[in-house]
Image (cartoon, rainbow, N blue to C red; front, side, top):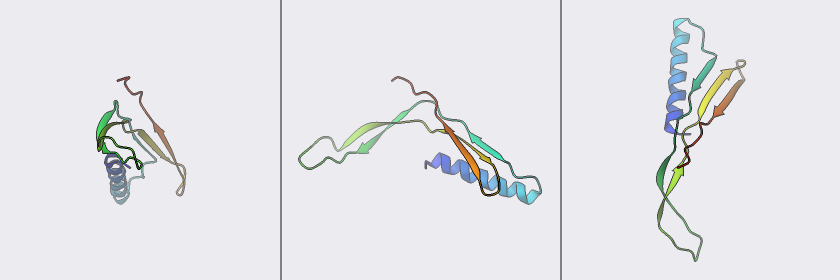
Length: 89
């Protein structure tokens, strides 16, 4: 899980706990929209024995997906995810 997804889930759980203490009903649906675009990062590359190449390569990383969680019951939820189209570059 990425830090953004973890942060969003933590924020949702804290908000749910705060609302529950205030006497309001817990939310039954939580969603985050997907990010647009891709980025790239430098990653270390490990080659098999006998092969060589650069120690680090720039690799593409897709954008974060959109998430939607819906409580179906106290013990069951539905989690949907979605992606936005990536640019051709």
